[in-house]
Length: 296
Image (tube, rainbow, N blue to C red; front, side):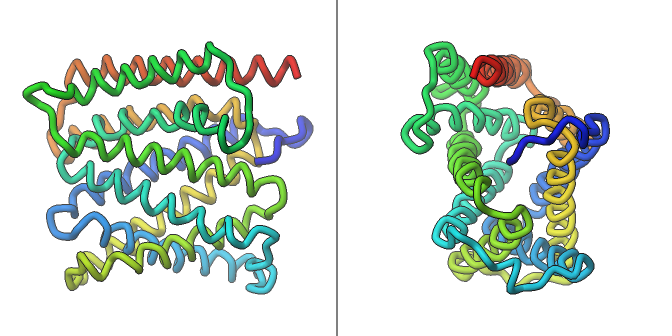
């Protein structure tokens, strides 16, 4: 994502759009958790991408975007591969949500920025100092506190949001690689289309004929997902990524509230303790990256 020039910045507008996106994503996760009782998680992911594509095409038509321009890319292979990691990430999260409280699954997923730090070394050839490596290790300690391996409350599904975070980190790293040459709407076009294509390859193995309610859920979650993507784009157009990044963690507040209202879930003390450790490690990584960028 390109940095925003200072004269075009509207930080408050950026923060409001970013938090709106986080709220919409939280609602999508909550709705999909409800319907994991009826449909396999992968079919919910497929339906989500159906809804996203329909919503994006309405948006592109409204903006009078030409297909020939949208599909023009200098890095076609990367544009095709990248959505596969997003499909794997969301599928892993939704499988986790089938069995776990939504706040717990979300807190585990917050290790994604730490995975990005670790993967930036072999993939982006970035130099990561000992301080940021320490933050990665501390963040993983937070995950262990939440999932309590070997404990009475341990469930295999606790690993799924962690796996989802790893896939999302790979997705984000590929996004960084594309940002230098690709237009935002082109990448958005391939994200939606590729997500639908990849999920369509596996959904036949878990297919259940959807009801009218399920179809409405596909459309609703996809529309909210598309709106969240567009809100994110608007947010980054109006504020620096370093300003917006900490607001990612407001998702824990939304999902904790939604989890209580919809499922009567009350997050455990272990969950909050682990979340504090993970979030603190994430903030430290942000702090170190900001300092490195200032020095360079």
